[in-house]
Amino acid sequence: MNPSQLRNLCIIAHVDHGKTTLVDHLLKQAGTFQAHETMSDRVMDSMDLERERGITIMAKNTAVRYKGHKINIVDTPGHADFGGEVERILGMCDGAILLVDAAEGPLPQTRFVLHKALQQGHQVILCINKVDRPECTDGLRIQEVVNQTFDLFVELGANETQLDFPIVYAAARHGWCTPDFDAIRPLLDGTAKSTLEPLFETMLKHIPPPRIPESETQDNAGFQMLVSNLSYSDYVGRLAIGRVMSGKVKKNQRIIRRGVNAAGAAMNESFNVQHLAAFEGLKQVDAAEGFAGDIIVLAGSENVEIGDTIVGSEEGKPLPRIVVEKPTLGMIFSVNTSPLSGLEGEAIQSRKLRERLLREVRHNVALRFEDGATPDQFRVLGRGELQFAILIEQMRREGYEFMVGKPQVLYQAAEDGSKLEPMERAVLDMPETAASEVTQLFQTRKGILTKYEPQGVARVRLEIDIPTRGLLGMRSKYLTATRGAGLMSTILLGYDKHKGDIAHRLVGSLISDRAGDTVEYGLLGLEDRGILFLGPGVPVYEGMIIGEHSKDNDLNVNPCREKKLTNIRSAGAEFLVTLAGIRKMSLEQCLEWIDEDEWIEVTPKSIRLRKKVLPQNLRSVKRSERIN
Image (cartoon, rainbow, N blue to C red):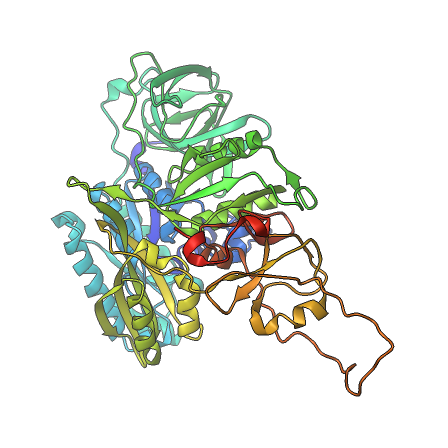
């Protein structure tokens, strides 16, 4: 294929602005699927966790054919915690479609991904999606969002070419778009018809074809490819996915991997191309050769990692490795030392846990791995609580048992020796009636209100700059304060001076003082002590947390106490009495709730909370003594 017939682009946006839905309809209207083939919604979200949570976690490739052109499209995550996926994918592309919700406007992740795209010199197409939302019917809000996005381009330092971006108005779930603002009303009324063809035409016109080096390097020896993604095949092993920067590659050709070892030193590996494929729709199709400008898949090395450069000869030089922003949070992963270890899953040894975490770090460049203080503990560094929650959920579904500690903020040292901590900007969209309560809530966590603006009828948007420490455990409190009607998104601002102590959890724990099964009679006597996490008939052990104490100290209790049977009865003693309510703790809630002296025990069937020190005579119940 002539490189001028190629287009490589990615779709970037804030979470839930419609990226994956837009890709669905692009695939349908490009004729990727035959008439007899069925296609599910959000077809690009292939992971179980993506479908369950309704978000994109991993960046994925697809390709469509349109009027003799091949368009490689990469669907990227929209959540800030998975920004590393976006950063490494942008290098494969020559342009981007920036998707912005017509009602919500540009949000924090919009700013983050747009800044990265502009830095790489990409031409951006602005797609205003969801123009069919009720608050956008008069068109005024759409114009406001366009102006806000233009201001964002200027603020981020876009050049004159990038500022002259084309605009397309779309309703992705209905499969139509238009470049003409005046055509939106007839399309919404149903008096006019349209498809996504204007978006295809805009791609071909405004996204440049791949920039290819001079013709003398277009041979097998001049082959050069940067590995941006990895996959796996049961037949040929590890698959390297990336864009061919120059030259060509053929199956069975001898090529060289230029990578780094564990110590960061350069190393080379020579191997044969056992498998070569290109993307067609959602499938990988065997290819005779891969040529400059295209995105290909090749196999032959089990050691290839993201960021490696694959070259065709000894003269080939490595490309700059993919660099993503540094992590802001760390979490300890430990072997499960609970008395119930091994009953519900595989009680893995430290060697297996280490191998699994290293495998994850090789696939996800936004994560870092460090050995812990003891041989059975390991430290993983990442972007946010959701990123850790996804990793934990994946591992428990693979059958592993392990423990994790409270996420810890990573500090830095300033030139004068003072401590710096990561700061984030939280953008909060909520009912106006909840604004004062939410503002007060964030101020107790050292948050500073920087913007307050109305959003439609009876809703407001706040922007609050707050330390990352202050956001730990905040999401559930925010949803409670807004009665579940608030939207919250965050973006990392950088590092600033330490803001002082922040109270994380003001209450203690209810802790089982013995092993056994919980009994309803015993739990009834504990209801007035706090909030219970467990119902009757649940196995517990000494040191396991069964609830939240109503006071600031811990309390050792007996949830296994049974009612003594006697011959004496009193009137009304046998009336049916049941537990008032139990708080079922999800994984994310546990990550937000625990303190430094507690573990989360994760198994394929259960998520338990426990103290790091199990025997009650070896630990204090006073917060000042157990938390430094």
